[in-house]
Amino acid sequence: MTGLYKRILVPLDGSVTAAAGLEHALRLGKDQGATLCLLHVVHDYLEQDGLRGTVRSEDLLRALRARGERILGDAEARAKAAGVTARTDTVDIATGPVGEAIVEYLKIWPADLIVLGTHGRRGLRRLVLGSDAEFVVRTTPVPVLLIRGPAPG
Image (cartoon, rainbow, N blue to C red; front, side):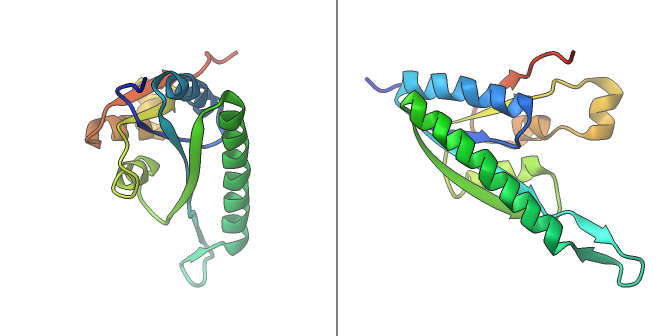
């Protein structure tokens, strides 16, 4: 029997909160008979070098991509161990919020649901640090399941 959700997008950044989202997505994917798309967004941070203005750090970009490959490899192995079908993908962005890249990715891989780990920040910390989860919830055309990570400490 298949469920309501056949395609579940799971953004991963290597954080504890993303891991909590993945665990929930794996249980949901198994229950629903869904395919998961494990997505990692590489934010191409730019550096100020004082002479040429803003430049890309190719070494940093390579390191970020390698980290993303490890994150996705580990997540894919967890999905396989759980008996859940999963695919992986990486998106590079140069500017803008990661949440925007997640929402845009739905044009490439239309999902029925996004499962997203969240820090659950409130107040000034959310305002200062931003919230990719909030951006996704406000702008996506599909349902979003937010999974709060473990409490600090």
